[in-house]
Length: 203
View 1 (cartoon, rainbow, N blue to C red):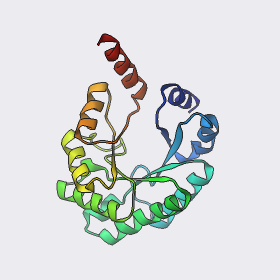
View 2: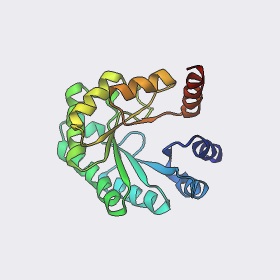
View 3: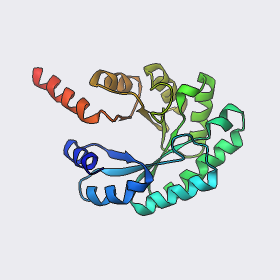
């Protein structure tokens, strides 16, 4: 965690995205660096109840998180129980808005049909989320350019799109941005920045 925070500050990443138990330490390490702390809620399966996700959100914000990436109840979505998905999202977005934190809804796109992706995006937008996020990184595959483009269109420009889970190099990041991603989440972030700098030096 300490190394992650040092790298994030050195390479000027937007956030470090970590499990809730490390939020307090990361917030302390990154204080004054310009890098914020993002924590995950209902991670990675999304199968906790809405009230628990709400509490997780409040606690993460209390500990210093300024962005929250929550996993929707994928099973409820696929079962057609859209009201449960709405409650899920609302339970996280409300405390985020009250505290000025960004909220992102992880839909685990690899498990969804295109119609379900659009539905998930519509619910996230209706719930007031700031972003929709493609995946946790624990799913069967990462984002595709086509999938990111679909989410961008479904959000109609009202939400950001965060591509995550399997973006491993500069070309992959460029493809996600070209498709409409406004954020890219990657454990290979340092490698990607170094590749970008090398490419710029060759120009």
